[in-house]
Length: 148
Image 1 (tube, rainbow, N blue to C red):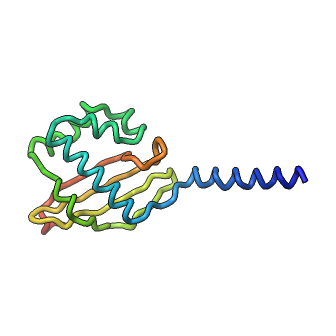
Image 2: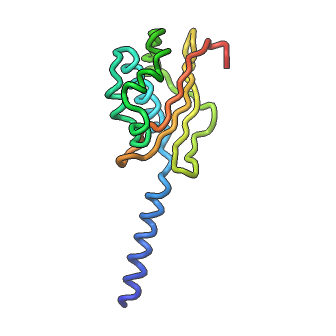
Image 3: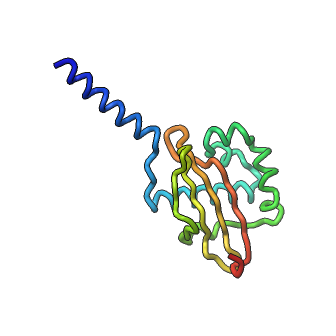
């Protein structure tokens, strides 16, 4: 009787351990929320020059590597050109490749917002950090809509 209970407990523990080790793919709605929240937080940082909120929302490995001043330097081109990404709030992201979770547990979201006259392209990586998906890498470009 005790051996069966032990096996049952071990089975439950293994189930939860595998669920923790391999995060589930978030729904399309959650992916859209992650994309927009990340880009709009970046936009606020670029427009105000204050990168502390963006920094606080990053995954721990990203926060450790880049302090607010390094983020500001990294996105200096956007800030200098006063690029406003707020249009993404009312648009739907278009995936350029299928979303996936790689072997490291990193959620990779690639795509663009079909905006005019320029298109907002993004390559965003998210990691479960402090029990929620948080940005691990942010790569954003604004290109003429005629360029793909």
